[in-house]
Image (cartoon, rainbow, N blue to C red; front, side):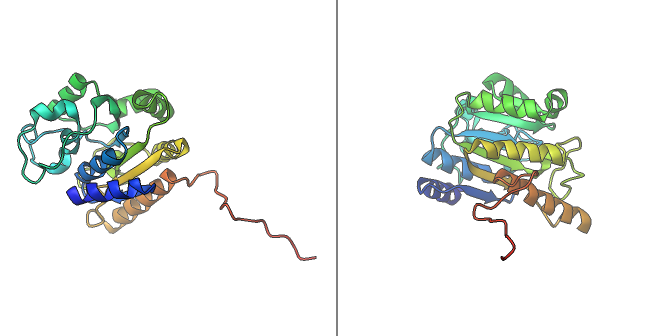
Amino acid sequence: MESLSEEVSRHLKKGERLLVLGGDHSLGIGSIHGQAQAQPDVVVVWVDAHADLNTPLTSSSGNMHGMPLSFLIHELAEFLPPTPALEWCKPCLSARDVVYIGLRDVDPAERLFIEQCGITAFSMQEVDKFGIREVVERALAAVDPSGNRPIHLSFDVDAMDPVHAAATGTPVPGGLSLRESFYLAEEIAATGRLAVLDIAEVNPLLGTPSEQKITVSNAIDVTAKFYGSQRKGDVPPDYVIPRPQK
């Protein structure tokens, strides 16, 4: 993860945008840390069924992919024990710079951290109540009211309902529809400020062949929307409508 941080930072300093493919969501430690070194004013939109905010002391599973944000947020530093191989990772985000979309499987300690640290969080309950349009607007306004900060979008495919992404390690019923995922991606793309995109937890070894195919296909389609592909259609910049020869 340290090498990922270094690579992300190096490419961002060259003015490039990055797509980081996982693997499990612990990749967020390296990708977000690296962006923060190059762009300290980064804001993070974490789209996931899970908060991934446990510490080694609160996690019941011990899985690192359920902990990445705890190593990155300043307000949680006092709850972290020394962690071998992560000595290099120093907190680089304030709680107010993080927003969740799509939560529906949150552990007690994570819920308490969210409330005590004041992290803005939209669960699927809020998505159902307000609709995806208002949730995206509120999410961006919460972390970037001025509308000029670089965005790190970390997308776990289990944010989507398992009918759209079953080939993943920890699917949770009741997630984002494909249309809601497309809308979210299109709106983030429209900001022009997406600097780093994580796509995590696609596992084509899980599920049936049909589920594997659907998950991979949908992950590719959502990724394309984050980079400007539009459902209303796209026109390449050099496209010219052919005319009949006279």
